[in-house]
Length: 217
Image (cartoon, rainbow, N blue to C red):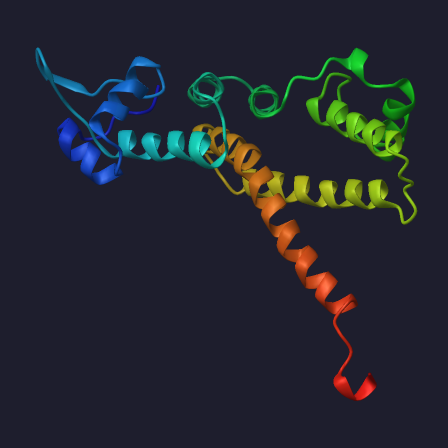
C-alpha cells in the first residue's frame, strides 16, 4: 500500500491535478490499482500527493508501457509488497513479456542464445531468453545468416543496458523507490531502447549511405 501523506483534495481536485477523469480514477480503485482516499464521510474522501504519484505511475505503465490492467495490477502489487527486489524484477519481466512455450523454440536456438549469454546468471524460463531464441529460429527460418555478428553485438548492447538499469536502481535508497524503478525501468526501458535504436539507425545509415557531393558524381 502506498504511504499516506497529508490528504487535502477531493476526487474532483485529484482529477484536475492528474488530468485523469473521475470515472477513470474510480476504475483504477475498483481494479485495485489505486488505494482509497482518507474517508471524511459516508461518500467523501480526501487524496494527496501519494495518490497523484500513483496515478502517474499507472498511466505510464498502461499508456506508455502498453501493459494490460491485470499486468499493471501485478507490478503495482509487487511495488507495494516487501518482496525481494529479485522477485520484483521477475514479476515485472513476466508482466511485460509475451508468454512463450519453451516447446515452441528449438534446442539449436536455445543453445545459440545460451552461448551468447555465457557467464550470465539467467534462469531457463527467463522470458528474454525464450524470446531471443524464438527470434533466432525466425531469423534462420527465413534464410537469413548472421554475417556481421548481429546477435553477439545485440547481446553486448543488452548487457550495457542492463548495467544502466541496475546503476539507476542503486541510486535509490529506500526499498519502495528501488521497487518502483525496477518496474518503471523494465516497462519503459523497452520503449526507450526501441526508440533510441530507431533514431540511431537513421543516424548511422545517414553517415554510411549519404549521397556523395555533386562534385563527386
